[in-house]
Image 1 (cartoon, helix red, strand yellow):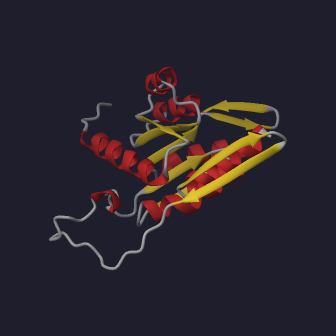
Image 2 (cartoon, rainbow, N blue to C red):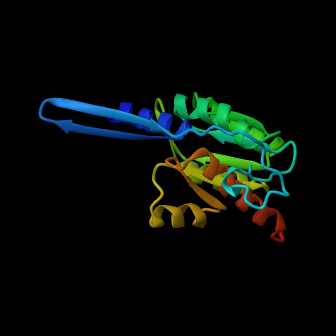
Length: 197
């Protein structure tokens, strides 16, 4: 089903794999591929040939990230992978029920450096737009980095997110290391920007 394929895509991104799905006659084939490497030494700053791709993004210590997503798998991935990619971070994740929306806004108001919202939150009897949450937290005085994380990241979608006040858009298909680097760059630019208000 479509939902099953979405969950497989999340797992593929979580573990930085590539996946192929194709049909030949009556047979459906599925292949996963994961690159790995054996490291014999640790690169130092003096090693000019060191691969900079493996350098962790820089964040201040004790960075607080507050996320909301209605997908169980996405919540578990955010909760377990973000602290690995952003060393020393404190990550809180909400979105199991509609009541979590109010709890999310409370936590963002109390202590949050980076607020991440899923654009399309679906709860029994209610639909919530992440862009509406961003407008609300900004209107309430939130001064940290506000990000939309969505499977819909066309140029038009990204313009919509930025126009609502989001500082960056994160494609759900993005690799976790790339997402952490995007957040590091956006956060560094955000804290350097003069704020009025």
